[in-house]
Image (cartoon, rainbow, N blue to C red):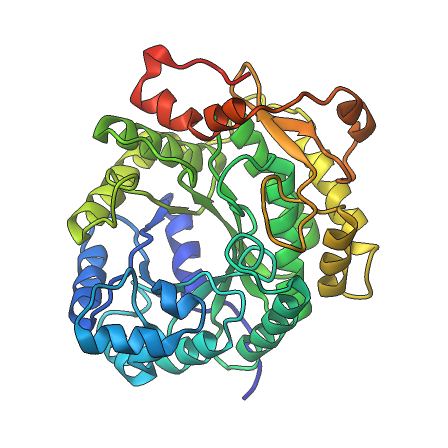
Length: 423
């Protein structure tokens, strides 16, 4: 087949919504049965907002245990997502028939370090988009060696690049463990994965960032992400996607809604094109279709109330310079982006705080300061400006301090009057 010459319908839809001043809102939704999954897609399409659909796969499919997924279907057991490979491409195509179109594209979301079978299935089913990356779906979610994941993702990217209708690919690099990663590290990983996609033939991509603990810092981070995407990925069709906070979530409905609406306002203020939402029951269970719809509607309304304009006086704490330094240095370490990524992690020059994967050094540390900003406590081998000064002044992190940081947003939104900053 001839390679694609322009963006696919997923990107065309996002671009059209953005031109109309609308934030695209998207759930993280997946159900095991065909009937339930189809009902969820129907409900999301009917939301009074610019929405795209999501088919999130189950845990068995993420690790290529398709036999267990098929057995669960045969027994009528509950699954925490849609077993696309076990159902088969023909069944998935039937789920999408009559609903996925130019006005409602659908993305398959997964979490697989070795996604070849899943990619083959989603392409055969006619899905419009998927997501992940060689680092972002390896280190947090698997024990697969990073070099093996890089090779697998290179093959999968080339598979997508070889079909005539572009399948959009979104980097998950801006999320990683979901929390306690300094913004410049998230940004650099997202751009590096975007460069990896581009190197393997893809031109229809998105870069990501996850809401953290301070809105002003997040605004600075998203502006840095967009500036770097223009510089490094300017010859691709790219947009930015924001994730509602991916860490420990508020347990009260009021707190959960408050954090969700803050993420929608952040997306609107920063010019982000797409938002992945969370629901009011995120801390306790898998949300229902109704709860997903409620989250989409609340996010869309919150974004509409926020003026989509460049805020005056974007903060400048050096996030852009840090991310640029990490990207530039990493690319010197290999003859291609994949080799550079593997080498950077082997040297500890890329390093994810608190990530226990065997190919991650796990020496660098982050902290939440007295203004609620997520900062470097010790960059270890990560090559950022002022790294030596930060390392000399590193602060000892206690187990209590780590727990306080992990629950920071939960406490801030559930119990705002009692929130204190971690020490």
